[in-house]
Every structure is written in structure tokens, then in C-alpha cells.
Length: 397
Ligand SMILES: Cc1cc2nc3c(=O)[nH]c(=O)nc-3n(C[C@H](O)[C@H](O)[C@H](O)COP(=O)(O)O)c2cc1C
Ligand SMILES: [Fe+2]
Ligand SMILES: [Fe+2]
Image 1: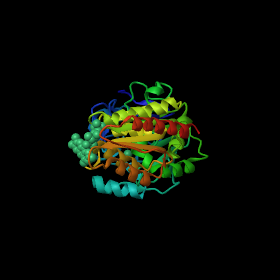
Image 2 (image 1 turned 135 degrees about the vertical axis):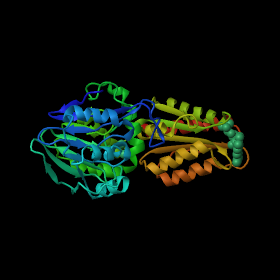
Image 3 (image 1 turned 45 degrees about the horizontal axis):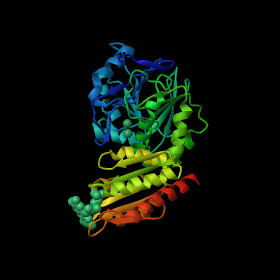
């Protein structure tokens, strides 16, 4: 990936792959890396769209030099998003190309000053403004809180490329292919949804606003700051974002459990058996202590049914379950059906906490709720099967 790759006439991908960073935003695992996509528009003017993380500068600058020439200049840097995985190279870019004008909305320009102390050579645009580059013309579409306050998109009118910032992005580095038609998409699907649900999902109402704003815009290429460039089926990724940000789910269930000694696990297995007997094939059982919450949240976004079961730990939820429940609450996922169960030995606490999560979530609770003392007896295990079965009915309705 040492060479710039043309994504449309005179528009190049000059992104970099990061295979070294283990945790995105210091919390989301990157088992297969991530790409930071930046783009360069050539022609009458040289225009950079976003930059990359400062850890990957040399490769980035090398690609810019290949297009701009050794003594060449950059006229503009358009900033769609200020998170440092895209803005980190701004100070160096400014040093290398002092005449480069930084273009962003008011909130962007404020952040450029606050992150990097840069105040000179900046241009503030507002929603719908256009920048005439001669051979190209850019239109700026403000999309606040997808997922930062300054986030915006830039639409290139001649080739109809939408530079979307973080929207429509994905975890996973680009292993050779960068376009949707060059890759095995099934290798990305999970990471696209894990990215959406954990990074963008909380801002679903703002995603909906952005999609409404883009309605009627002829988009031929979706160029995000992470993951594949969608030139063959941009409607695929736009359609997915529409579905996910409206909380539309597939038939299936996530059964997430916390168990130290296997008693609560036994209950979880009985619930899953009930789901299966009810005809549900898509069942994802996760031990919350051993599965990163970002993967559980991904499947909670995918499937309509969510079952949470926890043993009691120091009068409350098992810590990994408490963390999951807090994350689910924070993400604001809507329109799910929920099953809960748990166990305790002396005080109880797990089920009580799951009940209070139920109220806050606004999800539909499926009966029965099962609470076992120490080990579930035969009747309670039958009740767990019944819970799975009732949920299956609710999912299939
Ligand atoms: C460190 C620790 C703390 C616990 N705290 C509580 C508690 O506060 N109240 C309670 O009723 N049970 C408590 N328990 C007991 C467990 O909830 C109980 O043994 C349960 O059956 C364990 O389920 P499991 O086999 O799925 O791990 C605790 C157990 C451990 C190991
Ligand atoms: Fe971001
Ligand atoms: Fe990003």
C-alpha cells in the first residue's frame, strides 16, 4: 500500500494501515488493525481531505510527495473530523506546507486552535458552502455529533464522491484491496457493525439527521476515514447505517452471562435451549468475563433478543456484567426484547440490578424472570427453558 490509489478521476486514497495499535480509543480491540484513510484531490488545486494518526507520518508524507512532487505544495486541507487519529498529522503538514489553508466549520477551527495552537491560514465554512477548485468543486455538509460536535462531510461534485469522515467506517486494516469490489466483504461485516455500534451507534438520531440531509445527493463513492472505499455499492453501507440507526434488528438472540462456578452458566444454557426449541437459530452465547463487551454490543445491535444472566458478586452484578449493562445503557440502543435471570447465595443483588436496568432500557421484558439460590433446581431450569421459548415466540412474532 505504498502507492496512492486513484478512487475517482484525480482523487487518490493516501491512507495508512495501522497493525500495531491494540486498542482504538484505548478501549476497542483491533485484532486485525485499522486504516486511517486520507485522500488527496489533484488538478488545478491540491487538496488534502483529513490526515492520519501521527504514528504513521513517514508513509503518509511519502505518498503525498509522490503526487505533489518534491517541491510541490498543498493548497487546502479540508478537515471533516478532529479526532487525533485523523488530525494528528496537521502540525507537521502545516510545517511541510506552510501556505496550506485549513478549511473547517467553526467548531473544527476552534478545535484546531485548542489541539494544535494553529490560528493562521484557516478558513471557516458553514453548512452548504462550496469551494471552487477549478477542476473540482466541494460542498460541505455539516453532520454534528456523528460522533463529535465538529463532524462534517465533504461532497466532491464532479465525481460524486462523499468524504464521510468517521461515518460508514470500519475496524480492520485494508489487506491489499481498498474498494468494496476488491475485498471479501464478509470478512469486514462484523467489524463494520462493531465499529458502528460502539463508536457511532449512540448518535443514531444524528445519523438519521445526516441521512436525511444527504437524501437527493447522487453519491457514487463513499470514502470514509476507516475501512473500505465504497465505489461499487455505496448504497449497501448507506442502507446499513439507515437500518442500524433506526434500531432495526434481525431475528436472533444474544445470551450474555456471568458465572464463576457454572451455576448461572447452566441457567444460560437452559435459556438458549429454550430459544433453540422455539426455532431460533441465531443464538450467540457470551461469557461476559471472556468476551470483550464491544463484540457483545455488536450482536446486541444486530439481534432483537437480549438475555442477561448474572451471578451475584458483592451484593450486586458480577463486575463484567455491570460494565456491559452500563455500556448498553450508555449506547441508548432501543426496541429490544429482554430476558433476565441470575443467582445468589445469601443476599441476592444480581437480579435486582438487572431489573433496574430493564426499567432504564425501556426494552420489553419477557417473563419469567428466574432467580436461583446457589444452584438452580429442576423447576428453575425448566423456567429458564420457558424464558427462552417465550422469547423465541416474541422474536418470531
Ligand atoms: C467473591 C464472591 C462474592 C460474592 N458475593 C455475593 C453476595 O454479595 N451476595 C450473594 O448472595 N452471593 C454472593 N456470592 C455468591 C454467588 O453469587 C453464588 O455462589 C452463585 O451461586 C455463584 O454462581 P456461579 O456458580 O454461576 O458463579 C459471591 C461469591 C463470590 C465468589
Ligand atoms: Fe472519530
Ligand atoms: Fe476515526
